[in-house]
Amino acid sequence: MAAAAAAAAAVAPEGVPASQREEPVRDDAAVETAEEAKEPAEADITELCRDMFSKMATYLTGELTATSEDYKLLENMNKLTSLKYLEMKDIAINISRNLKDLNQKYAELQPYLDQINVIEEQVAALEQAAYKLDAYSKKLEAKYKKLEKR
Picture 1 (cartoon, rainbow, N blue to C red):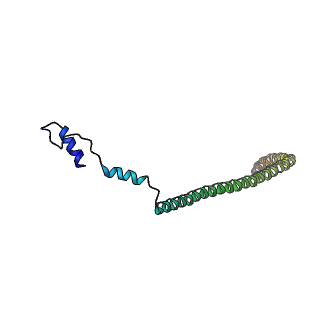
Picture 2 (picture 1 turned 30 degrees about the vertical axis):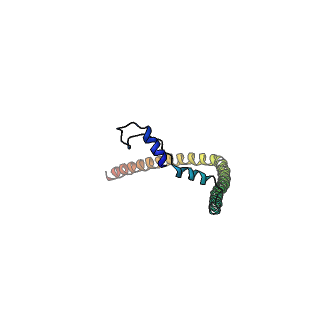
Picture 3 (picture 1 turned 180 degrees about the vertical axis):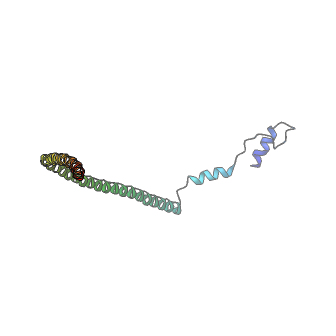
């Protein structure tokens, strides 16, 4: 390394400080690191990789299980909703049937209701006639008493 620095100093112009010179510096430590990276993996790195893959598999299995459980929950909710709608459909059919029955019974009672209305009108007219008759009879009684006093 010292030989490379000396060779670079010989080529560098005079008067330029060494700190400002741009020189390619060879780093032998980097070369050694590169050589170390080419060596076969150590046993503990292999074990760490296995551990990482095992934990990753466990994590992914958990994620997939959670997703599967979510879909099962949605499926159950859909089934329950479907059953609820079927119950509501049955209730609506029963209400419709009962409403038709009530309308039919009302139609059967309509002639009697009409008769009741006619009778009510007649009773009201009879009541008015009774009030008029009562008023007339009171006038006659007053005239009779008046004539009797004479």
